[in-house]
Image (cartoon, rainbow, N blue to C red):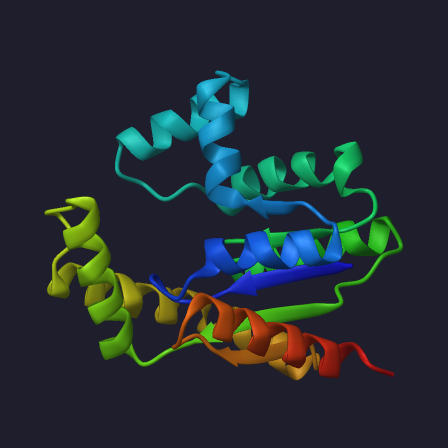
Length: 191
């Protein structure tokens, strides 16, 4: 099983990715975790990422793709994986397509968590209060949601055209959303 999960900030991607990974017995692979791990281990690519981030620039697709592809070559990913946070650009979609073609595998589905921005802002404001995150305010959260939508619109469109998109309402309890994902994914994967 090879899956992607995407969704705006606050949609619960990380929480749902962990549940999906357990259900399908595949690793959940987060691009953010890959960055943090390479930075922590001071790998050459990790050091390059630090330089780029310190300048305030975006990490180029080639570096992001290199880090993700290295991770997908590890033995625990041979039977499948769930990517969280990748691909975010058309260049990254192309890089993933090349790897899938080279390994003679295919993407099974792209889970797109959807939610009303007001619901996401309310959820993240609550989380900010509980976790003591003063930098999370309504304006900053709305901006991050807008950036997500602008950055991923083309990627979502590609996977919709390919018939791989599984759109799921992300508003509700963790269990309700998990059940919606399972039902939608099962329906999508049935022959």
